[in-house]
Amino acid sequence: MIKFLDLQKINAQYAAELKQAAAEVIDKGWFLLGERVQTFERQYSDFIGVKNTVACANGLDALRLILRAYIELGFMREGDEVIVPANTYIATILAITDNRLKPVLVEPDIQTYNLDISLIEQAITPKTKAIMVVHLYGRTCWSSELEMLAQKYNLKIIEDNAQAVGATYLTSPPAPPHRGGGKSAKRTGSLGDAAGNSFYPGKNLGALGDSGAVTTNDDELAAVVRALANYGSLEKYVNKYQGLNSRMDEIQAAFLSVKLKYLEVENEIRRKIAGYYMENIKNEQIILPVPAEYKESHVQHLFVIRTKQRDKLQSYLAANDIQTLIHYPIPPHKQIAYAGWNNLSFPITEKIHKEVLSLPMSPVISLIDINNCIEIINKWKNR
Ligand SMILES: *Cc1c(COP(=O)(O)O)cnc(C)c1O
Image 1 (tube, helix red, strand yellow):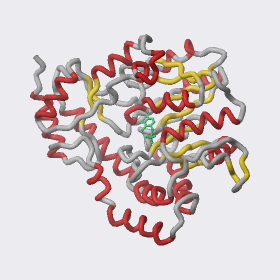
Image 2 (cartoon, rainbow, N blue to C red):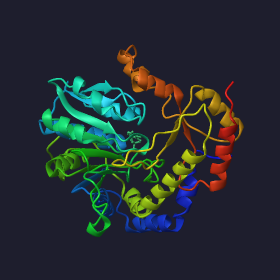
Image 3 (cartoon, helix red, strand yellow):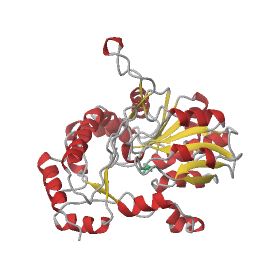
Protein backbone atom coordinates (compact mmCIF):
# COMPACT_ATOMS: atom_id res chain seq x y z
CA MET A 1 0.00 0.00 0.00
CA ILE A 2 1.42 3.40 -1.01
CA LYS A 3 0.11 5.90 1.50
CA PHE A 4 -0.96 9.37 0.46
CA LEU A 5 0.91 10.81 3.44
CA ASP A 6 2.71 8.80 6.11
CA LEU A 7 2.64 11.08 9.17
CA GLN A 8 4.03 8.40 11.42
CA LYS A 9 7.09 8.03 9.23
CA ILE A 10 7.56 11.79 8.89
CA ASN A 11 7.69 12.31 12.66
CA ALA A 12 9.62 9.10 13.34
CA GLN A 13 12.60 10.78 11.66
CA TYR A 14 12.76 13.23 14.55
CA ALA A 15 11.40 10.96 17.30
CA ALA A 16 14.31 11.42 19.70
CA GLU A 17 14.26 15.21 19.46
CA LEU A 18 10.47 15.40 19.67
CA LYS A 19 10.37 13.18 22.75
CA GLN A 20 13.09 15.26 24.35
CA ALA A 21 11.14 18.45 23.61
CA ALA A 22 7.97 16.98 25.12
CA ALA A 23 9.85 15.77 28.20
CA GLU A 24 11.29 19.24 28.78
CA VAL A 25 7.85 20.84 28.68
CA ILE A 26 6.38 18.19 30.99
CA ASP A 27 9.24 18.53 33.46
CA LYS A 28 8.95 22.29 33.49
CA GLY A 29 5.19 22.15 34.03
CA TRP A 30 4.42 25.38 32.14
CA PHE A 31 1.95 24.74 29.30
CA LEU A 32 0.68 28.02 27.89
CA LEU A 33 1.97 31.55 27.22
CA GLY A 34 5.53 30.58 28.01
CA GLU A 35 9.03 30.71 26.64
CA ARG A 36 8.61 27.83 24.16
CA VAL A 37 5.97 29.77 22.27
CA GLN A 38 8.08 32.93 22.47
CA THR A 39 11.08 31.07 21.09
CA PHE A 40 9.12 29.54 18.25
CA GLU A 41 7.58 32.90 17.40
CA ARG A 42 11.06 34.41 17.10
CA GLN A 43 12.35 31.50 14.99
CA TYR A 44 9.33 31.61 12.71
CA SER A 45 9.60 35.39 12.26
CA ASP A 46 13.24 34.92 11.23
CA PHE A 47 12.31 32.15 8.85
CA ILE A 48 9.43 33.98 7.18
CA GLY A 49 11.15 37.35 7.29
CA VAL A 50 8.60 39.35 9.26
CA LYS A 51 8.70 41.51 12.38
CA ASN A 52 5.91 39.67 14.18
CA THR A 53 4.63 36.14 14.60
CA VAL A 54 1.64 35.64 16.88
CA ALA A 55 1.10 31.97 17.61
CA CYS A 56 -2.48 30.79 17.88
CA ALA A 57 -4.55 27.62 18.03
CA ASN A 58 -4.86 26.79 14.31
CA GLY A 59 -4.78 28.17 10.78
CA LEU A 60 -8.47 29.02 10.63
CA ASP A 61 -8.13 31.08 13.81
CA ALA A 62 -5.09 32.86 12.39
CA LEU A 63 -7.23 34.12 9.50
CA ARG A 64 -10.23 34.87 11.74
CA LEU A 65 -8.02 36.84 14.12
CA ILE A 66 -6.51 38.96 11.35
CA LEU A 67 -9.94 40.03 10.10
CA ARG A 68 -11.23 40.52 13.63
CA ALA A 69 -8.24 42.73 14.40
CA TYR A 70 -8.87 44.86 11.31
CA ILE A 71 -12.45 45.30 12.52
CA GLU A 72 -11.27 46.30 16.02
CA LEU A 73 -8.84 48.76 14.44
CA GLY A 74 -11.69 50.31 12.48
CA PHE A 75 -10.32 49.37 9.07
CA MET A 76 -13.37 47.28 8.21
CA ARG A 77 -16.78 46.54 9.64
CA GLU A 78 -19.65 44.08 9.38
CA GLY A 79 -20.91 43.78 5.81
CA ASP A 80 -17.65 44.87 4.15
CA GLU A 81 -16.34 42.74 1.32
CA VAL A 82 -13.29 40.53 1.05
CA ILE A 83 -12.21 39.22 -2.33
CA VAL A 84 -11.25 35.56 -2.14
CA PRO A 85 -10.69 32.73 -4.63
CA ALA A 86 -13.76 30.56 -5.24
CA ASN A 87 -11.35 27.64 -5.46
CA THR A 88 -9.97 27.20 -1.97
CA TYR A 89 -10.31 25.10 1.14
CA ILE A 90 -13.44 26.24 2.95
CA ALA A 91 -11.50 27.52 5.99
CA THR A 92 -10.46 30.60 4.00
CA ILE A 93 -14.12 31.50 3.48
CA LEU A 94 -15.19 30.53 7.02
CA ALA A 95 -12.74 33.07 8.43
CA ILE A 96 -14.53 35.80 6.47
CA THR A 97 -18.13 34.87 7.23
CA ASP A 98 -17.30 34.22 10.89
CA ASN A 99 -16.54 37.95 11.12
CA ARG A 100 -19.80 38.85 9.34
CA LEU A 101 -17.83 40.09 6.37
CA LYS A 102 -18.89 39.21 2.85
CA PRO A 103 -16.71 36.90 0.75
CA VAL A 104 -16.69 37.95 -2.90
CA LEU A 105 -15.71 34.82 -4.78
CA VAL A 106 -13.43 35.20 -7.79
CA GLU A 107 -12.51 32.46 -10.24
CA PRO A 108 -9.03 30.91 -10.29
CA ASP A 109 -6.63 30.65 -13.21
CA ILE A 110 -6.92 27.12 -14.64
CA GLN A 111 -3.13 27.02 -15.15
CA THR A 112 -2.09 27.83 -11.60
CA TYR A 113 -5.30 26.93 -9.68
CA ASN A 114 -4.66 30.17 -7.79
CA LEU A 115 -6.78 33.33 -7.77
CA ASP A 116 -6.92 34.90 -11.25
CA ILE A 117 -5.48 38.30 -10.45
CA SER A 118 -6.77 39.78 -13.73
CA LEU A 119 -10.36 39.28 -12.48
CA ILE A 120 -9.92 41.12 -9.19
CA GLU A 121 -10.47 44.70 -10.32
CA GLN A 122 -13.95 44.07 -11.72
CA ALA A 123 -14.97 42.54 -8.37
CA ILE A 124 -13.98 45.62 -6.36
CA THR A 125 -16.81 47.77 -4.96
CA PRO A 126 -16.82 50.67 -2.46
CA LYS A 127 -17.29 48.04 0.26
CA THR A 128 -14.19 46.02 -0.65
CA LYS A 129 -11.62 46.18 2.13
CA ALA A 130 -9.28 43.27 1.50
CA ILE A 131 -8.05 40.65 -0.90
CA MET A 132 -7.37 37.24 0.57
CA VAL A 133 -4.93 35.30 -1.59
CA VAL A 134 -4.41 31.59 -1.07
CA HIS A 135 -1.11 29.98 -2.05
CA LEU A 136 -3.02 26.87 -3.01
CA TYR A 137 -1.32 23.46 -3.03
CA GLY A 138 1.91 25.24 -2.03
CA ARG A 139 2.27 27.53 -5.02
CA THR A 140 2.95 31.23 -4.55
CA CYS A 141 0.08 33.49 -5.62
CA TRP A 142 1.47 36.98 -6.03
CA SER A 143 2.19 39.66 -8.63
CA SER A 144 3.08 43.32 -8.87
CA GLU A 145 -0.39 43.89 -10.39
CA LEU A 146 -1.90 42.58 -7.15
CA GLU A 147 0.21 45.03 -5.12
CA MET A 148 -0.82 47.88 -7.42
CA LEU A 149 -4.51 47.06 -7.06
CA ALA A 150 -4.25 47.00 -3.29
CA GLN A 151 -2.53 50.37 -3.33
CA LYS A 152 -4.95 51.93 -5.82
CA TYR A 153 -8.06 50.90 -3.88
CA ASN A 154 -6.56 51.00 -0.36
CA LEU A 155 -7.10 47.30 0.26
CA LYS A 156 -5.31 45.01 2.68
CA ILE A 157 -3.79 41.89 1.23
CA ILE A 158 -4.14 38.91 3.53
CA GLU A 159 -2.32 35.71 2.63
CA ASP A 160 -3.68 32.29 3.42
CA ASN A 161 -0.26 30.67 3.78
CA ALA A 162 -1.60 27.42 5.25
CA GLN A 163 -0.36 25.25 2.37
CA ALA A 164 2.76 27.14 1.36
CA VAL A 165 5.07 27.52 4.36
CA GLY A 166 8.54 27.98 2.88
CA ALA A 167 7.44 29.21 -0.56
CA THR A 168 8.96 32.39 -1.96
CA TYR A 169 8.44 35.24 -4.40
CA LEU A 170 11.19 37.16 -6.18
CA THR A 171 10.52 40.84 -5.58
CA SER A 172 13.20 42.05 -7.97
CA PRO A 173 15.34 40.33 -10.58
CA PRO A 174 17.94 38.13 -8.89
CA ALA A 175 21.28 39.85 -8.45
CA PRO A 176 24.36 38.15 -9.92
CA PRO A 177 25.94 35.66 -7.48
CA HIS A 178 28.88 37.93 -6.62
CA ARG A 179 26.37 40.52 -5.41
CA GLY A 180 24.49 38.16 -3.13
CA GLY A 181 22.20 36.68 -5.77
CA GLY A 182 18.89 35.31 -4.58
CA LYS A 183 18.65 37.68 -1.63
CA SER A 184 15.67 39.41 -3.17
CA ALA A 185 13.36 36.44 -2.59
CA LYS A 186 10.70 37.00 0.06
CA ARG A 187 8.74 34.26 1.71
CA THR A 188 5.02 33.85 1.38
CA GLY A 189 3.63 34.93 4.72
CA SER A 190 5.65 38.14 4.47
CA LEU A 191 4.34 39.47 1.15
CA GLY A 192 0.98 40.94 2.21
CA ASP A 193 -0.22 42.99 5.17
CA ALA A 194 -0.77 39.87 7.24
CA ALA A 195 -0.85 36.12 6.77
CA GLY A 196 -2.50 33.10 8.34
CA ASN A 197 -0.24 30.07 8.74
CA SER A 198 -1.34 26.54 9.64
CA PHE A 199 0.70 23.89 11.42
CA TYR A 200 -1.99 21.22 11.12
CA PRO A 201 -0.13 17.86 11.25
CA GLY A 202 -0.49 17.22 7.52
CA LYS A 203 0.83 20.62 6.42
CA ASN A 204 4.45 21.09 5.31
CA LEU A 205 5.39 22.35 8.78
CA GLY A 206 3.18 20.09 10.84
CA ALA A 207 2.77 20.13 14.60
CA LEU A 208 1.62 17.06 16.54
CA GLY A 209 -1.84 18.51 16.93
CA ASP A 210 -3.48 21.80 16.00
CA SER A 211 -1.68 25.11 15.87
CA GLY A 212 -1.24 28.13 13.67
CA ALA A 213 0.20 31.64 13.55
CA VAL A 214 -0.34 35.13 12.23
CA THR A 215 2.67 36.72 10.57
CA THR A 216 2.83 40.45 9.88
CA ASN A 217 5.12 43.45 9.74
CA ASP A 218 2.35 45.59 11.22
CA ASP A 219 3.12 45.98 14.95
CA GLU A 220 -0.27 47.46 15.78
CA LEU A 221 -2.12 44.62 14.07
CA ALA A 222 0.09 42.04 15.81
CA ALA A 223 -0.68 43.54 19.21
CA VAL A 224 -4.44 43.43 18.59
CA VAL A 225 -4.24 39.85 17.28
CA ARG A 226 -2.25 38.84 20.37
CA ALA A 227 -4.83 40.36 22.67
CA LEU A 228 -7.77 38.89 20.76
CA ALA A 229 -6.26 35.40 20.93
CA ASN A 230 -6.03 35.70 24.71
CA TYR A 231 -9.59 36.71 25.72
CA GLY A 232 -9.02 40.22 24.41
CA SER A 233 -6.45 40.88 27.10
CA LEU A 234 -2.83 42.02 26.98
CA GLU A 235 -2.58 42.44 30.72
CA LYS A 236 -4.00 39.74 32.96
CA TYR A 237 -7.61 40.48 34.03
CA VAL A 238 -7.70 43.69 31.98
CA ASN A 239 -9.81 43.16 28.86
CA LYS A 240 -9.69 45.59 26.00
CA TYR A 241 -11.62 43.48 23.48
CA GLN A 242 -14.28 40.79 23.51
CA GLY A 243 -11.70 38.22 22.53
CA LEU A 244 -11.46 34.48 22.24
CA ASN A 245 -9.15 31.78 23.48
CA SER A 246 -6.87 30.75 20.63
CA ARG A 247 -3.39 29.97 21.86
CA MET A 248 -0.61 27.63 20.84
CA ASP A 249 0.39 25.08 23.47
CA GLU A 250 3.97 25.18 24.75
CA ILE A 251 4.36 21.53 23.78
CA GLN A 252 3.34 22.23 20.16
CA ALA A 253 5.73 25.19 20.03
CA ALA A 254 8.52 22.90 21.28
CA PHE A 255 7.70 20.37 18.54
CA LEU A 256 7.54 23.09 15.90
CA SER A 257 10.96 24.45 16.88
CA VAL A 258 12.34 20.98 16.17
CA LYS A 259 10.51 20.56 12.88
CA LEU A 260 11.23 24.04 11.55
CA LYS A 261 14.94 23.11 11.35
CA TYR A 262 14.14 20.44 8.76
CA LEU A 263 11.47 22.25 6.77
CA GLU A 264 13.72 23.48 3.96
CA VAL A 265 15.23 20.05 3.45
CA GLU A 266 11.78 18.47 3.44
CA ASN A 267 10.43 21.03 0.97
CA GLU A 268 13.41 20.33 -1.29
CA ILE A 269 12.59 16.62 -1.24
CA ARG A 270 8.98 17.42 -2.09
CA ARG A 271 10.21 19.46 -5.07
CA LYS A 272 12.38 16.59 -6.25
CA ILE A 273 9.46 14.19 -6.06
CA ALA A 274 7.25 16.62 -7.95
CA GLY A 275 9.96 16.98 -10.60
CA TYR A 276 10.15 13.23 -10.90
CA TYR A 277 6.38 12.93 -11.34
CA MET A 278 6.48 15.72 -13.93
CA GLU A 279 9.20 14.08 -15.97
CA ASN A 280 7.88 10.57 -15.89
CA ILE A 281 4.11 10.64 -15.90
CA LYS A 282 3.20 10.12 -19.52
CA ASN A 283 -0.47 9.56 -20.06
CA GLU A 284 -2.51 11.56 -22.55
CA GLN A 285 -5.56 11.45 -20.30
CA ILE A 286 -3.75 13.25 -17.52
CA ILE A 287 -3.02 16.96 -17.21
CA LEU A 288 0.05 17.66 -15.10
CA PRO A 289 0.42 20.83 -13.03
CA VAL A 290 1.97 23.82 -14.79
CA PRO A 291 5.36 24.60 -13.19
CA ALA A 292 5.61 27.78 -11.15
CA GLU A 293 6.87 30.83 -13.03
CA TYR A 294 10.33 32.03 -12.19
CA LYS A 295 9.30 34.69 -9.68
CA GLU A 296 7.05 32.24 -7.86
CA SER A 297 7.92 29.03 -6.13
CA HIS A 298 6.15 25.84 -5.16
CA VAL A 299 6.62 23.86 -1.97
CA GLN A 300 4.52 20.97 -3.29
CA HIS A 301 2.22 20.61 -0.32
CA LEU A 302 0.05 18.68 -2.76
CA PHE A 303 0.86 17.25 -6.17
CA VAL A 304 -2.38 17.67 -8.07
CA ILE A 305 -3.14 16.25 -11.49
CA ARG A 306 -6.34 16.59 -13.51
CA THR A 307 -8.29 14.17 -15.62
CA LYS A 308 -11.82 14.04 -17.05
CA GLN A 309 -12.45 10.63 -15.47
CA ARG A 310 -11.09 11.49 -12.05
CA ASP A 311 -13.27 9.11 -10.05
CA LYS A 312 -12.34 6.22 -12.34
CA LEU A 313 -8.65 7.00 -12.00
CA GLN A 314 -8.96 7.18 -8.24
CA SER A 315 -10.68 3.76 -8.08
CA TYR A 316 -8.11 2.29 -10.44
CA LEU A 317 -5.26 3.57 -8.26
CA ALA A 318 -6.99 2.33 -5.09
CA ALA A 319 -7.35 -1.10 -6.71
CA ASN A 320 -3.59 -0.94 -7.25
CA ASP A 321 -2.95 -0.06 -3.59
CA ILE A 322 -2.24 3.62 -4.20
CA GLN A 323 -3.93 6.08 -1.87
CA THR A 324 -5.00 9.40 -3.37
CA LEU A 325 -7.13 12.27 -2.12
CA ILE A 326 -9.26 14.97 -3.71
CA HIS A 327 -8.52 18.60 -2.81
CA TYR A 328 -11.39 19.34 -2.88
CA PRO A 329 -14.48 17.40 -3.93
CA ILE A 330 -17.07 20.16 -3.27
CA PRO A 331 -16.35 23.88 -3.80
CA PRO A 332 -17.34 26.25 -0.98
CA HIS A 333 -20.21 27.76 -2.98
CA LYS A 334 -21.78 24.29 -3.38
CA GLN A 335 -21.63 23.43 0.32
CA ILE A 336 -24.76 23.12 2.47
CA ALA A 337 -23.13 25.60 4.88
CA TYR A 338 -23.44 28.24 2.14
CA ALA A 339 -26.84 27.21 0.78
CA GLY A 340 -27.50 30.78 -0.36
CA TRP A 341 -24.68 30.50 -2.93
CA ASN A 342 -25.56 27.07 -4.30
CA ASN A 343 -27.03 28.54 -7.47
CA LEU A 344 -24.00 30.69 -8.25
CA SER A 345 -21.89 29.55 -11.15
CA PHE A 346 -18.10 29.37 -11.11
CA PRO A 347 -17.34 27.12 -14.07
CA ILE A 348 -13.54 27.03 -13.70
CA THR A 349 -13.78 26.31 -9.99
CA GLU A 350 -16.36 23.60 -10.61
CA LYS A 351 -14.27 22.05 -13.38
CA ILE A 352 -11.26 21.91 -11.07
CA HIS A 353 -13.27 20.28 -8.31
CA LYS A 354 -14.54 17.63 -10.73
CA GLU A 355 -11.16 16.81 -12.24
CA VAL A 356 -8.42 17.11 -9.62
CA LEU A 357 -6.66 14.25 -7.90
CA SER A 358 -3.78 14.53 -5.42
CA LEU A 359 -1.07 11.89 -5.78
CA PRO A 360 1.02 10.56 -2.87
CA MET A 361 3.39 13.30 -1.78
CA SER A 362 5.53 13.63 1.33
CA PRO A 363 9.18 14.01 2.26
CA VAL A 364 9.36 10.35 3.28
CA ILE A 365 7.89 8.58 0.27
CA SER A 366 10.45 6.27 -1.34
CA LEU A 367 11.62 6.44 -4.92
CA ILE A 368 10.46 2.84 -5.34
CA ASP A 369 6.93 3.84 -4.36
CA ILE A 370 7.00 6.88 -6.63
CA ASN A 371 8.20 4.76 -9.53
CA ASN A 372 5.47 2.24 -8.84
CA CYS A 373 2.92 5.00 -8.80
CA ILE A 374 4.15 6.41 -12.08
CA GLU A 375 4.21 3.03 -13.76
CA ILE A 376 0.63 2.27 -12.74
CA ILE A 377 -0.57 5.74 -13.76
CA ASN A 378 1.11 5.41 -17.16
CA LYS A 379 -0.68 2.11 -17.76
CA TRP A 380 -4.10 3.62 -17.07
CA LYS A 381 -6.36 3.63 -20.07
CA ASN A 382 -9.64 5.33 -19.61
CA ARG A 383 -12.24 3.62 -21.75
C1 LIG B 1 -5.37 23.85 6.38
C2 LIG B 1 -5.91 25.09 5.79
C3 LIG B 1 -6.51 26.09 6.57
C4 LIG B 1 -6.85 25.93 8.02
O1 LIG B 1 -5.82 25.54 8.84
P1 LIG B 1 -6.15 24.72 10.17
O2 LIG B 1 -4.88 24.78 10.92
O3 LIG B 1 -6.52 23.34 9.76
O4 LIG B 1 -7.27 25.43 10.86
C5 LIG B 1 -6.87 27.27 5.95
N1 LIG B 1 -6.71 27.45 4.63
C6 LIG B 1 -6.16 26.50 3.85
C7 LIG B 1 -5.98 26.79 2.40
C8 LIG B 1 -5.75 25.29 4.40
O5 LIG B 1 -5.24 24.35 3.62
